Image (cartoon, helix red, strand yellow):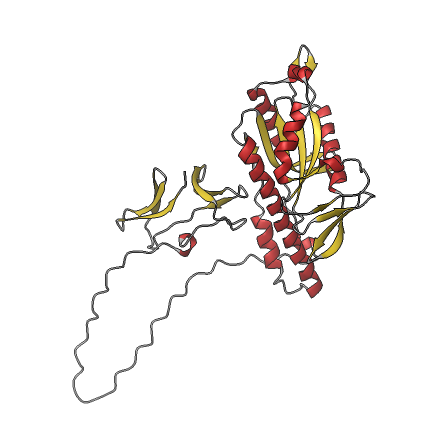
Length: 364
């Protein structure tokens, strides 16, 4: 069961894209902003791939709970955890996702090198990064910020395990010597095999720790409630002033052409010409926001499905779990278009225009 989905990064990307046109942005600042956008998009792609793998295997299981994109604080310490995967033994896999589209190399000292445009550059060790996340999460649990289940008067302690998930298309160059924690660096498509093997090694004594599905959901929900999202002050990060809010453009109404004065002649004025009646409005067309093939606004994927939520109908992305609102309107002022669902088909209907058109169909 999925307890928490990843936060939407679209707003951050939009702000950064707008900063590229900032009047005070120098070429160096624009280069740094573009790198920040690439980092965010790469992170979204890496997390999306891991999210999809977890969803396929554990998304509908009551024996597993999944939390995506969890930011927790303990005092002045902060952990930004990409994924938590918890089972009924209270094994908690703390997962750090890395895209590394061109691969990653790890030397004999445990130092990581990634590549961009075939050029190497050093990156912090995700193994050490994840170990810090586990330490902060352990302090949160030890402080009683999450109520853990008990049996025979004893608290069942979670077993925290580290995993660094790399894109399944990336190349991993491993060191020639054994490095502590190197075994936790695996590709996304090896996740299930790695986890299943660890569960099999729990042994018969571990069955005494097994908790119910409702208890598992309660523990995971408490962890998800500790999430404290943060909004970056992107202009301040790059030393820029805030951009003024951009006005929403409205279509310009063409002005009436100035009336031409009739030439003065001795003949009497011609009779006033009555303009012909305005033609009836044609059948309104769907707005551009819903024309063509709908795609996810976060990752551009077409693997979406129409769903109904608290704020109405929206598209859910199967690749990145992102949400895209469905915006409709027949185009005639005062008319209120609505969505009608019929089995897997979704229709846009306007009672005033007496129109009904199929605009999307879910796959089974």
